[in-house]
Length: 103
Image (cartoon, rainbow, N blue to C red; front, side, top):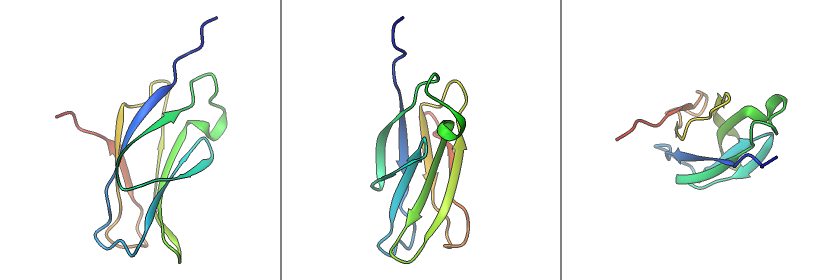
């Protein structure tokens, strides 16, 4: 039986207006991965590997004092090709993950 090809997700991480030396963190399948602001590509688990929380993508901003701006996206059988993370204006508000618009 041939292996299912890995799905790649393009994720655009927008920098907050006041970054305070903050950095984004991407959590895929329960594993946190430090990231950089801008456009990046992430490998998602295949449909056969997804169990429980592994079909969840979470992004948050972290600085030396606290983490904030958490946004969660639960992907179904066919994950989107691209998502955009927008951080909140204030550090106690949630962030936003949405599908990227085709241009």
